[in-house]
Length: 182
Image 1 (tube, helix red, strand yellow):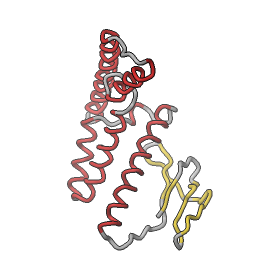
Image 2 (cartoon, rainbow, N blue to C red):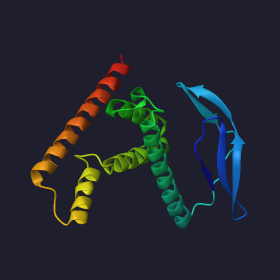
Image 3 (spheres, rainbow, N blue to C red):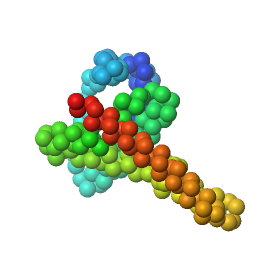
Image 4 (spheres, rainbow, N blue to C red):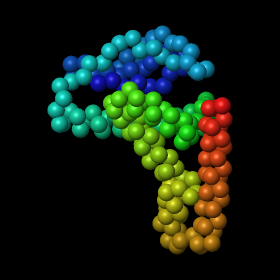
């Protein structure tokens, strides 16, 4: 078992499972290389799997889902902090192209990508942005706190503005994706 935390300088803080005990390894140095303008770590070790059973498969599925969820949240936080540019965001055209490349390699390359996209969409949908489910949850929370609903006309306006924002964002990303192919 292993766990990584964020890195900027080629050092990873790792937690490994050795003989049934978690061992923290601070600042483990790894070689880095430039990839599309970013420093990425070159992992120079192998992780060997355990014997597959129904229990281990189920456990690993949960761990992988949580790991993907953490990755999505950390990426979102990094995007808010300005670590990523708008040009780094992929829209439906680029996602479809990436899925097509993964499908050519085989189903075992495609399934993790589908899982990541699904978890990404689920987390994004729960963000407190009007017009998304997370925005609706904010109104429900307000209603629970103040014991009366927000008037429908105000809620409709907030969701309409949120929808305009989302549609504009989607159009910008779609144009960027299509532009990248030319």
